[in-house]
Each structure stands twice: as structure tokens, then as C-alpha cells.
Length: 428
Image (cartoon, rainbow, N blue to C red):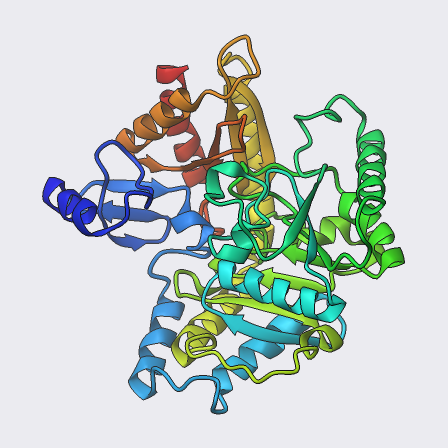
């Protein structure tokens, strides 16, 4: 791999992150497993950053892609596109948003860009509320609302961003409060924040479970309580479902549904898992919000016939095989297994998450300080044992991220937990 690594470094940016001291080239996959160029087999507990949602090389998806590619690969949104219309119909019906319209993009970053464009145009304001520790993409505008400094290389932005408490339950000034008091304190913080603005804030954008931030989340109902405040001020709610959508959390199809007591979001963004590796992102919004733009627009690659065919086949498989239910059942077993493993490890502060979206937070023993070295070492040891996982966290945290395909079996969950246990014990 050294030759390919040297070639990578010679032509690609220094800031393009690679996992592992000796990076691997993944050549093929099947089910929940992948193989590298040296023939090593791995159980995949990260799914290409939560993107291989159902399974590697899922026959239903590869067949749909092949058949569509044999007819036509590309046409753009300037022409009617049957697969795009069919997928939009299904997503609109599943979204929970009344009178929904769907616009397809090629990534979650682009989807969040579009949501910001819609919200700021609709509200005639460039003021955005975002959550501390958040991540919403790598474009100029989405970096400007990202509350995680490790992924925000510039402070310049076309938006004025105000950061609100609440995305992280176990850290920060409200961590010691009960759930009820935590929500009340975060709502009071929001009210105080709005009292300091010039009025006319466009939107609050929030991940129901923070992805890059380490799979952290507030108590259920926080965003419902926020929404009551937002509605009084006419402020839109954008639910960033790029990582939480499609049943990954097990309990709900969308992450916002854990906070749905005050109704659905005005705008929902999605990406990653719906394409099972194909490049699909998108925005769902109420018709009046989606149609507020008064200029022409198209998408050259958004809604591509091939990616739409993949999305339709993948969504059908997900629903027909109740993968949301599988995420709830197998994810519940896995998180309890990991909590049992980690209970006596001084380097593990907390195991948190929901469904098949699980974080293991590592600290320096006897402290609350992030243990970045241990996280990197566990990642290496897990890989050596045949398991691929991710990592993340905010400015003061280090978290192992676990997010396998939603078709994970109980036996594979046990196998992965055993490999991770050995890796943790060897390091911690």
C-alpha cells in the first residue's frame, strides 16, 4: 500500500483525512464485510461513514443500478425523470411534513446548503441558530454553522450564526441537571439568545443525534420544546437527518420523531444511507418554503436516473425487511453488550447512542479529559482484529463511532463486540 499512499499524498490535499498509520485500500464488500487489497477481511462497523446502510453489494441495489445504466445514465433535471419522481413521492410520504416537496442533491453538504438557502430566502434573514458541537458539511456556508472547531477551518461566513446549548447531554454547564431541568435550561438559553438578536432569525438547524460530534444527543423532547419557542417567532426548524434518517436510531424512522410532540420540522435534509453508497442527498420542505425561490434553478447531477434507481431499490429493501426494527433489536443488544464490557474500564467515560448509532467516549483515566491517543490506538487494534470503526467528538471529547449496516445480525454484533473488547482492553 505504500506506493498508493505515496501517490495519494503527492496529488491530494494534506487535509484529506485518512484512517490508520498504514492506510488500507478497500477493494470489495459483501453483506457486512469488506476486504482490503491485501486480502484481509473486516467486519464493517462504520459503513463508509454511515452510508452503506443496508449491506455491501446488495443484489437488489446493484441490479437496479446496472439495469438503469443500461438504459440511460444521465439527463439532468431539465427533463422529466421517472425514477426521481417516484423516489420523491415515497420520501415525501415518509417525511411527515405536510404538502411536502423534495429536491435532490448529490451530498448532505449540498442538501444543508440548499436548506440554508431556502430558510434565509423565506425569512429574509441571514441569522441562523445552530447547536454547539454540531457538524453540517464542508461547504463555505455549512462550515459557517458548524459548532465543532475541528471541522471548521475558517471563521468567515455569509451567515450570522448563534450557537445554542442542548446537543450534548453529558457535558457542559447543564450536564448535572435532570432531563426535565436540562430541557428547561436549554429553552431558557434559547429564549435569552433570541432576546439578543435583531429579530427575524431564519432557522434553527439541528442534528437529532450529532454525528461527527460523537453520536451525542439531548433528552427526547428538547427540539419539541425549542419548536414551541421558534413557532412564536416564526423561525423555521431544519432537521439535519443526514446521519439519523431511514431508521438507523431504531426507535424512529427519522431522528426528529423523538422530538415530534410539537409537529414535524419545516425542512428536513437527508443523504448518506438512502443511496447505499450512491451519491444521493436531498431536502424535504413544506411547499411554501420550497417554492419561495424566485429565480430559475436546476441540478445537473442531483436526481440522476442511476442514483434514483439505487435509492428506490434500497428504500424498498429497507422497508420490506424492517431494518428499522432490526436496528432497534440488534442495536439494543449491542449497546448493552458494550456497556457491560466498558463498565470496568477506566478509560471509558460513557457508552451512548441509539439503535445502530453508538458512541464509546474515551477519557484519560481519573479525568474528564479527551483521550485522543487511546481513541487512535483502539481504532488501530480493532482493525488488526478485523473490525472497522470510526471516531469523532467535539473540542473536548474523543469518541469511537459504531454504525454498521442496518442488516447486522446478532452473531455479527457479538463478533464485533468481542473484537472491540479485546482492542479496548489492550489499550485501556
